[in-house]
Length: 95
Image 1 (tube, one colour):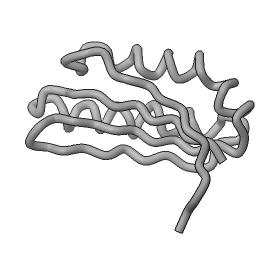
Image 2 (tube, helix red, strand yellow; image 1 turned 90 degrees about the vertical axis):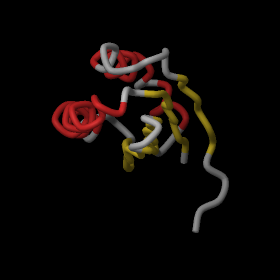
Image 3 (cartoon, helix red, strand yellow; image 1 turned 180 degrees about the horizontal axis):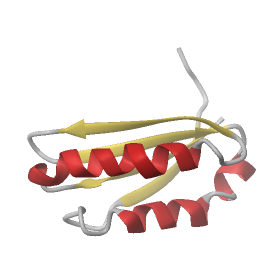
């Protein structure tokens, strides 16, 4: 299993609108991607920090969604206070 983690900061006053956009656009779209397992959106409301975690069956499935992911991040450009970071990991343990 492989994970993509996107993290960044959004002005706290814009968080609810960004969360709504994620639920309305990213969530239904990611479910259609080959090898998708699950996704989570985490927020720290006071600081505006956000983390999105997506899990994929294989490294190839994760890599095949790189361009899709860039498109999703572009949807949130007006919300981010700085450019978000994107990292890929192999999941080696789970409880």
